Amino acid sequence: MESPHMIWIAWKMLIGNRVKYLGIVFGVVFAALLIAQQSSIFCGIMLLTIGQIRDVEGPGIWVMDRNVEFIDDIKPMSDTDLFRVKGVKGVDWAVAFYKGLVRARMEKGDFHQVILLGIDDATLIGAPEGLFMGTLSDLRTPEAVIMDDAGYARIWPGEPFVLGKVFEMNDHRAVLVGITKASRTFQSFPIIYTRYSQAVLFAPSERKVLSFVLVNPKPGIPAEDVCRTITTQTGLQALTRDQFMKKTIRHFLMKTGIPVNFGITVMLGFLVGTAIAGQTFYLFTIENIKQFGALKAMGTSNRTILLMVLSQAVQVGIVGYGVGVGLAALFGWGTRGLTKLAFFMPWQVLVLTAVAVFLIILLASLLSIRKVLVVDPAIVFRG
Amino acid sequence: MTLFDPVDALSEIDVAVRVRGVTKEFGSGDWLTKALRGVDLDVPYGALLMLVGPSGCGKTTLVSIVAGTLQATEGEVIVLGKDLAAMKSSQKVRFRRDNVGFVFQSYNLLPALTVVENAAVPLIIAGWRRSHAIEAASEILDQLGLGNRMTSLITELSGGQQQRVAIARALVHEPRLLVCDEPTSSLDAENGRITLELISKIAVQPDRAVIVVTHDSRVYDFADQIASMEDGQIKSVRDCRTNACKNPPLENS
Image (cartoon, rainbow over all chains, first blue to last red; front, side):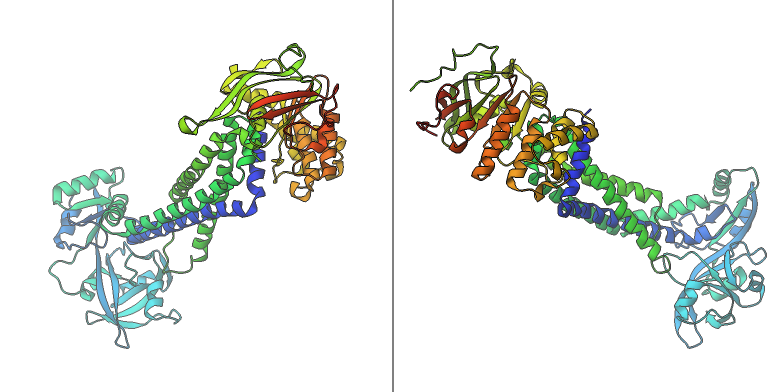
């Protein structure tokens, strides 16, 4: 079997021409880096859109107006809807949850748009998990609010975390009693947690204020079944936590320009990577065409020549993929402290990048393969 | 002038290469070029035949057909007892791999490989393990005086040394037919003579044949036969073992 050793020769030919080799690898690295990095940022942004759903652990079901399409698409319900949901068979417990955008007026008179979350007064279900200053029970005191750390840094940049800060929302005094870690949101506004009864005071006056009802199904009853029952009996939209996250992501995918913008960048990376790798690989093949001709004259079969070129392409693909994805991961790791940058690299990004790199090396090697397969071994006799 | 008659001179058993009525055409219509116009030639075993003639006379085309890298348009090409015209492409590839060694004008060595790796290439193509191929290549490089340059890169060698590597590569798998295309054209007189000396010393064996395409009259005295070509045809074949090939000078060379 000649092939394994011929592949060794092919690799030596490839690596022997350092400049061309680095050129081809650069093309693949460029494409892999851009595709993996942009896809990861895209996934990070998608993760931002569901950050507040992920942060509310415990209740398995979210109930909302039937026209709500995503987490920020608030269509308030009547307070009585809470009791209607509570009355549905299969519901273990249900609590009110407020979510809205309000303006906060700081001590110096400056205003900041904030996301206001109102959690159940009695149980504090929906409270943040990452509280690192203050205690959750402090939220029961009048006018008490908890703020996320990124929001704090945005409102009071450069200042150390201090509790007891006072500001106003809707002309109502708010006192900071805790600081928490929270998933960043798509809107990137500071997040303020307070009790539901307090939240309706902080929010502008409206006839309906109930944003969501958080529900837990009774043990042993599938959440999907309870969702169906709630929808049938109340006419409200009831989704499991996973369903709501998927619905939110689907909204951003289908109804915003975000995927198109990222898609264009990814496609650009793919095209430029293919062009660089393809052109350099072709030039490399042309430069070595007499060597390939000599190998054919000496009795190397077309099948082996094909394997040689493919193995060169695969070698470049593996190195380019590894370096490109590695650099993208390094970028994500290096910027993990920057709260303004969304970066999330799930395994699907790695697979997508691998498929793209495979296509790039396939396209890059096609012209070269054709060239070496049709080369006449008699070429070696022409000076 | 006594001319060698290629058709009647040798029996089939004695000849390594028998070419009869071979033509080769390139292109078609107004662009048709007849490179070979009915060539007859025999190359006996144990002989070094030099193919001479002006540029464009068809030497390279003829040697490409004999080596099995080019298909004749018409005619019979029997090499080492095998009819090349009847062979499929894949059979020709195997035939070349097992039976033909090549020395090219521009060497066509692989610059990324070392001297010994280059010389081992035909054995690797033939399916040998790399270590065994390199061992065998080392032996022949020793014979050619390159024992101390085994691990050098090709680019570190002089032209004469590169041609010796090419000869080692051509002979390492002990081919029964060695085809050399202008092996001395890139070399100075001394290196040209050394190259032909090596070829005639190592390659010319009773069961082998060597064909050398050359313009270089300085190396004619290494020839056993000199076939002179002109306008796609063999004009004469002189047997240097019985006739002086240098004096008087050959026509058309």
